[in-house]
Image (cartoon, rainbow, N blue to C red; front, side, top):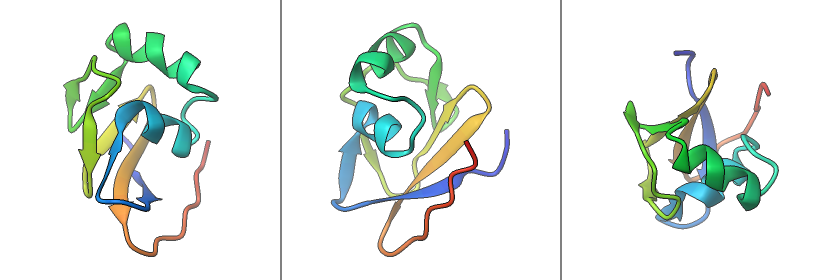
Length: 81
């Protein structure tokens, strides 16, 4: 697993499907849905199949080789993908 990229969110939490779009891991919610349902997304090292899973500061999301961490506050985002 590569070092996760910090992706800032506005509120205290965000849903998994929304975070995948925010982190530029998918183009749309329609693209996220089957990836999540097929078990291709991990949250904190465990397969997550719920698109509505609430993510909080520090949660790490993996999709393939891409890894992103939920961050709150002022964080500069530099997504390598």
